[in-house]
Image 1: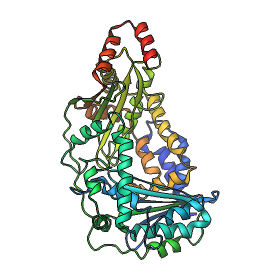
Image 2: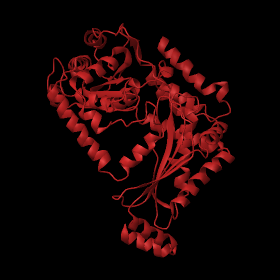
Image 3: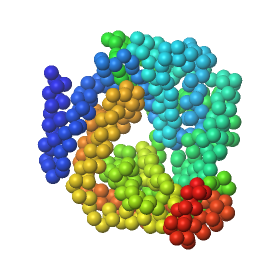
Image 4: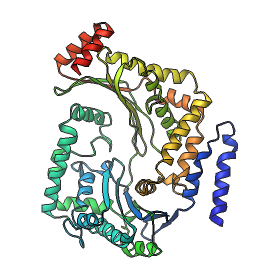
Length: 471
């Protein structure tokens, strides 16, 4: 009864809060509040934070874990350690040696994976609800009793180097663009790539990786979430498997905040394998927990993302680009808004820059109308609501809960989004999307550039015909 009353008060407050009276009222957020009211949150004595979300209509459950460790924590000579260690955790632990982990879960038809980022590393496994006890046992064993031997380390070094070749070195523009962008924050914790350098990866040893595990894989740096059909013994099983993991005496190492002084940057990167020119534009913004983060997210959606964005609207008829793509990049205390465009044959890169800057200037000079603002909020909410039926997505989201949202992991973000005003969006457009942006021209070999320059001077119907023939 108490939970129902709390939910009712929170829900009604979200609708009738005086701060929101002048804004549109989007009632579709109710499922977020309903789902959040079912979450049980508690912390073990060793500092491990646990969230349980029972969903009785499911036949599976997801166990998701996130550790507060990523590429930013790597010391000099350790680039790629966080990602390499993620690989190692699938290759044996004290009580599940070798490929036991993968074999056990594959036999159950389970899905499991992990990913490493600058600020964190996360893991998940979705399995039949009857396998809860086995799932918790294997997860706990590999997290604080991993087996790190020379053979396994060498095998995973080779795997990571193959991944580096496939995703970075064998793709046109990727290596040069990545190194250029990382150079913009050289000297900070973010000045190297998540995948690391070939030299650091090959020189890693079981001893150095064990030390990395000891420093950063600790219960008080972990969030554990279980979503799905949970049996009544779930809390006892969590305590049984994770409770014995001792919290280190030393506090978690402090992380220096990233400070960037944005400057206008223009670079040309030539790749002899490049099939066609491309353009990357990027703006330094703020971290995901910053007060301006919600307004920036809506601004990015308005400008660059989805079929109703400003860039999409001016591209409906006779577009200047063949492709545009934007993926917000959010760090804990920094962000990068960006857009990548591939021009039509008749369009120069300078013309694309002018079009994008023109859209930004329009937003800076004229506030969005209320209808557009409401649409942006509804798009954000719809995207979030679509994720509610998937236990894997829910569990990984819960394990990624930031400190400011710890008591309201689903609704706090929505409340910040819903509180954004048109003035907020106009203000952040002026403050962050200014002339201090990064422009990177991705250029193919000279003969392709020469041919494209020729097409830019031809009549549009002729250049379009030649473009279709060539591309």
